[in-house]
Length: 85
Image (cartoon, rainbow, N blue to C red):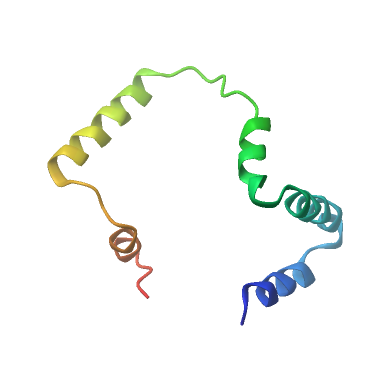
């Protein structure tokens, strides 16, 4: 099944109340072309949540793990999450 066929099936499963939002989003993608993600990021609201001590600790832990174990490939991460192909 092609990606377009899968998309058509998803559209058919949409609750009627979600159809207008899906239509607007698809129109946005068609009008934006390759720049849809860039435009969405530019129009996203500013993250105004404060950077907490918990956030800093999480970043420090991630940095430590990266130094100790190196990066993890996409395929390895999917395997670890139980999504082997």
